[in-house]
Amino acid sequence: MANPSPRRTSHPGSRIMSVASYRPRTEVGNETVAALIDSSDEWIRRRCGIESRRHAAPDESLVMMGAAAASKALASAGIDPLDVSAVLVATMSHRGRATTVAPLVADALGATAAAAMDLGAACAGFPYALATADALVRSGAAGYVVVVGAERMTDIIDDHDRGTAFLFGDGAGAVVVGPAQTCEIGPVVWGADGSHSEVLRYDETGILRMAGPEVFRWATSVVPDVAKRALDAAGMSASDLAAFIPHQANLRITSVAAKALELGPHVQVATDIVTNGNTGAASIPQAMAALPDTSGPALLVGFGAGLSYAAQVVTLP
Ligand code: COA
Image (cartoon, rainbow, N blue to C red; front, side, top):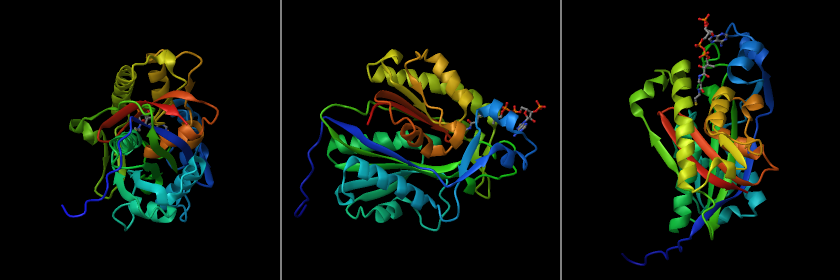
């Protein structure tokens, strides 16, 4: 190999340096959604805990929202975009003309030296991308990595579909991952079960269709199991946690998991779904950003279409 580039050095660990969120301007209450699907505010609150969600306007594209969250995260970490070596975008709702979102987000950030790629693991996308960033930083393949979760779920939802129209929202969240002397992003526990992919799938027109009760049953069994295995992998117990931040799929799924983990009252349980809806791959970083006064270890669990799941314990920035 002629004139190989010098390799970066590896690091003992990596850490989340900062977190930020972008919430679209338009807040949409249950009454508006319910009117299209013969439902009610009361039914929606009872079945999934949602009171309102955000819908993106035409100018609030995936790239715009992802870049806005990432730009805030970079500023808060004090990292120059030129020093970013990779931008990873987790998304399941990209229907634009560009093949991938990440190069456009990197360009909007001015991260001109960064590798950029999308990562498709649906609502498990953020913890998948975080595990990838952790591996890149620890190996020395990357220095600073921007990890974004961005969704315009309204682009892939039929607003007359009684099973999904009330559940999903739009938005973006981002973190900056950098080197650390200790492992502040714990070992990932992840997996997939493609044999049941039909319960959350795109139809022939690219619209997301969901078998709600089947997804509910799967999620309430897989989330506590994966969460416990991620705690074990990190050498921790639930009592060591400061926060539990599962994918904001449905408040009832979060409650079942929190009960199964026997979380004490000192553990902050993320409930961002109440005013944000289910924002797919964006939900975990958005929920993390919504807990600004919480520090210490947090358990993240992503799960969704694929079916895919991933969990890890991280130190909150
Ligand atoms: N509004 C009002 N009533 C509705 C309704 C709606 N939007 N959707 C269904 N119903 C009615 C049904 O007609 C049914 O009525 P019946 O008992 O008279 O027949 C009843 O509510 C129960 O329907 P079901 O489909 O079994 O609803 P559910 O209790 O399972 O709740 C979900 C639906 C979607 C809230 C629930 O299945 C769920 O949360 N699933 C997991 C979804 C999820 O987390 N997805 C994201 C994964 S990333």
